[in-house]
Length: 128
Length: 186
Image (tube, rainbow over all chains, first blue to last red; front, side):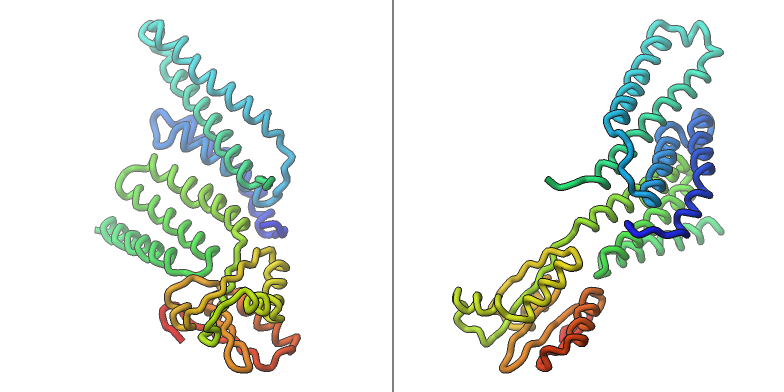
């Protein structure tokens, strides 16, 4: 996987926007079509993994990724606490669909960052 | 009707890929077969009306897992060299020292280091048939009167390069390379 292949890099460059679009489509329509936060998030993680296949360069700051992932986890906990626990979903029920989309989006971001961190940690693992 | 045929075909492909995965000698091919297995599994999930599971299976099963296994394979480095011979009745330390100075073993070990493998030599008193049947050496060296035989698996791609290496150097006319197929014996 270290040697460069122009076929793989060209095709991956061509597929990049479609992978992003497909991932966000799955997340945004997760509440009434198949898919959801986890599936869309893993599709978006496949984008970073495709980048690792083309260009195995460790120029990410892993700690930043960790912090962003933890921030998404906090938001993921805060949103139901703010919206569901006080009973706002019964009073303002027109916000239920935006709430579901927001939850799916947060889950998708958290899953994609988590899977990317796993693969990058594994791929760039150095002994010693 | 068409659904049933497609489902049966996909299940047959899955069984075939699972068998190929565990039967192949080349680990890289095993990973590819496993990816095809996951892809057919995700199509079967679609036929079972579980598209959610199908998306997750397609991305994780054939994308992420294949990549994780490939990068694990890059770190799989131990290459086991078995040295057997019925004509070494008393294996003593002196004998082993003598063997370790053996040019052929050193050549193979150097070749392994060149290919980023870690050579590990195992000396054993069992006969060549027992060694090939019961153990899992990557390459087996047998000493006999006046010569050395190398046994390598037919699908082990390092064996081809080793044979080429010895053919180019032509340093030992008594050396012959024998390939065998899985389960066929010699």
